[in-house]
Image (cartoon, rainbow, N blue to C red; front, side):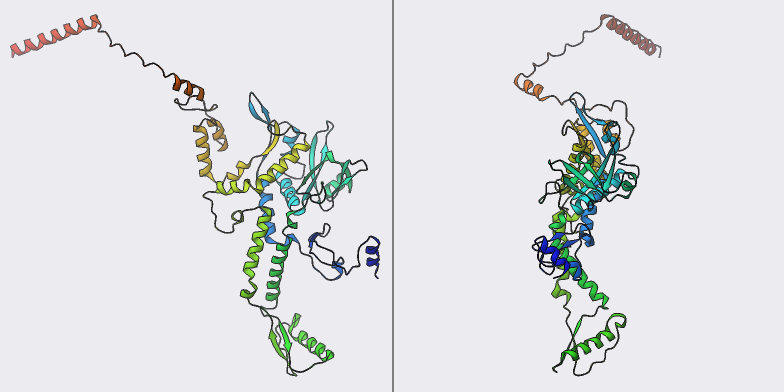
Length: 455
């Protein structure tokens, strides 16, 4: 029994060649996923574990979320009954949501935080406070080197590591209370404080796609020639078979690939490769990609795959927002709210402006603002500000058409219609004006008569 087997036996596990169990298991240090039934000493058997980072589809899904979140600016909002909601620009949250630290922009911070969250199920950020106990900095830590820890009385602390800048400024391997950590986590099936990545559910699909692509890589490395076996009708001893195999490899593999092997003793090469039709490579990769996209809840059209059934970009983004994207934004907003002790919706909250996603769709933006302004929901200056236009005089309040009345007034008019108005009184002639007109007509008549007689 080896040393590793004795160590495993001491803690109640089997020897190193025993199976690991159901799986798959995530390897937090090296990364990747250990498939079900793999030996516990997989690194000694030459086994290469599959890693989600090798899948282009996983990268596409994670990048779609991370880059989308990084595009949207966040704002601290506070609601007042007499004024509506107001943007807070002087709070600690408002400052951090613009500049989380002195070496990252908020786009850098959110991009990497979301990637950590989706790749590992957890994202950790150390909080640095000022003398007033206000958060002034957030520093992302390595989720593979950080973890929550419980005290004897159940208090929650965090062991944080993996940020070289924090290591130099504060120290490596620090332990801080939960109030000084921004912890984003996904579903927690194993521990209330440890999230699990969607990669767990997609491990088999990733492995299938990885195996199919590896097969094709090996095929092309072999100069697109299928693998061969040597067959003969003669009965060969083990020594003879080993010698013939060695001769074949010396002349046809490695640096000698493409050489011309000389066969003797009735040996014949027989290809054992299968056609692309038999292996259904394209179908396997397509199904694998679709399953991974479904696990991450990303519409295939967002990734540029397939025909879109949506009439506009807004409809496509609306479908994604109603699913995985909307949840992710709300999840991040709520965790920030807990860190900064916000009252929550609708009184005080953080909100990311997802209207930034519609910037390229100019036509839909114009139509939406036009309908909102004509309906009296928004004022003209608010709509102009979205297009970076200066405010105009009189545009600071909503406008409505003259026939628009409150429902209470409309109901009252239906019960008590207004009385018809009295007919207008015709204007009375002015006597002075009439006398002057008569004299003018008489004078003109006399003038015309005299001219006629003289003629």
